[in-house]
Length: 221
Ligand SMILES: [Zn+2]
Image (cartoon, rainbow, N blue to C red):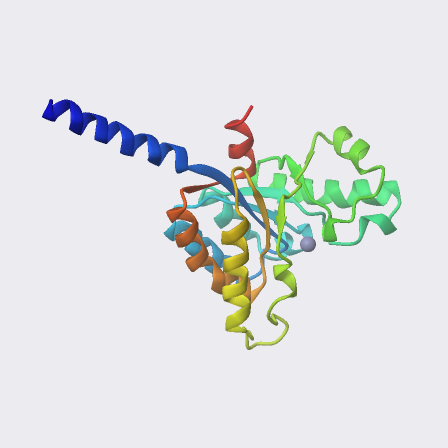
């Protein structure tokens, strides 16, 4: 009797634990950017988290070592165009070039093809779907956006951070996160980097498993 009760207790605790676990995909737009990307990678490692980095081709060309480090640590790369121009102001030919140039650069550097594309500033021209289909890319949409790129000041040498911004960002994400959310964050913002350790610790407590977009898709289909 004693044995079966303790067994039931174990099964119960195990089930509750299983029910609480859910996947979330953190995505970081822009960069790679020295002084930010390394810190983000170290923090992700510390919490055993995998993420997706929507890189800008122009920045990747300047910092190829950071691109290789992102991949080496088990994260995914996504295409965020070559020059980070507003696609709504470009011709179809220019849009194709913006996407393909970033795609080619990453392939030459890593021998890997990125499978997701996300427009700069989320500005999607009406013909983007057709172009992505032609290039065998999926749109890297998001479900949660907290406007982290507007917080802090990354323009000067001194990274200016308002502590309130850090706690607000953490609280908002924690309060709204749910199963299979795709969180839009930015690679190059001091507030985001500062908020990340506390955020990851709290999300892990909630049972969040941090996956890349491809890993999360694979666990669904
Ligand atoms: Zn961007």
